[in-house]
Length: 551
Image 1: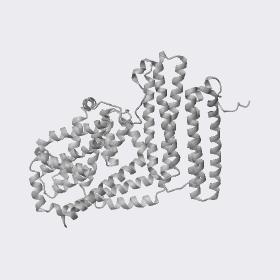
Image 2: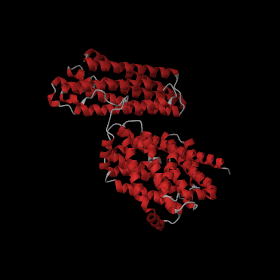
Image 3: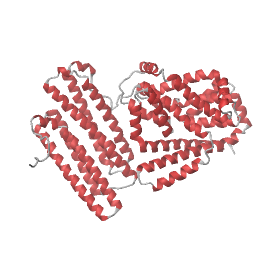
Image 4: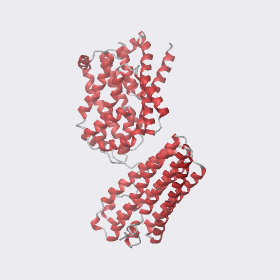
């Protein structure tokens, strides 16, 4: 077999391994995405829980990069302390060693079963959860298949006398060996692929045990470079966690490098097989660095914050423009600043509504993802506005200004809820419609477009009421909410008619239209709720729609 042929096979097998990781990661995130984010949000409150969550989530996703991206979604909003985020990175490093431990055993009987079961369940699965879990099984099967193929491809290379001579010369110096493995791990974008190569060389006796451990250090060092490179060019805060992770591994490598001989002797007592010893060294290194640095993370976090201070990111829509902390000493000015920022939230919501309008007419998953990502901008602005209003000295506000605070918060709260409905309900349905290749009839698209257009008009009216205090416009807004109740009734009647037809495809399409109408009605209710306070203040809004009780 020629060297070119071997190189092409290795490139394809590494690509298959990386694609398997992607399939597993996307399948798990679709199946448990909200639960994983909730777990991470809860875990990122202290270092111990963050470390354990990093192990668990990364073991599920089989990618520390995917875990880092989920952490970034929290840190980007300024709701996550750096020390727990660094602790989770330590846990993620330990989590990635689990697949290496699996790869050190014979998996030739496992991946065919995973692929067969995954494909069979995916073809027959009806719910999205079952299909996502089946996709995860397929991804695991592809990963293990790629690892198996890599081993088979490496066997003739391991027997090469030229390779033995070359690697023997290169690995005589431990520092050069570390740098060589770091470059390999960085180029492969996967410490798993690099570790498999090291284990194959060690198992074939191409390199010594100490050289294998030196390459293990290099694999860990190289895999820490990719997240750092990906974070470059953004806000300095995004560099802190990957830079801290790289610093931890650099110090760990520096401490372990002089003691490779004693470490090899100690590990050989547990397992003398060279390939398994390399896998154990990988696990031991990550556990040791976690134990060493978990207590020092607050100091490291403080150092990183000083070295990489916060700065507003130009063009970042989630960066507040009007929340000037210097104005907090003048509450009336601060309140006006908060109101201006809430109007920015209204602009974001209107953009989400316009984006969701086209998501049901076009099979463009990119549009759906863009609208969903915009909700993160809305959540960030909402959090910042709450903190800013909370910092105002409310004792110095007049009664009229206090009412303005309530009106500002009411608008912000309802806008944030609208964003959640668009993201978690409408966009979930739009994405599922695209995955199921289900088309809505033209008449349904026209109705959805008309409802979206009406919502945008009412949102602009609510903003006008907020700015002017126009009671007549507020009454109109509440009165027109009844139109959506009529639209929901009509959609329900159409759905019942389709149910009587007995055609499953039409029933599913009708049910989707009904769900969309109900969610748009909920959005209309939140828009109308923004003016309730104004109407209640002068007795123009009844406390209840219930009819008086009968004696």
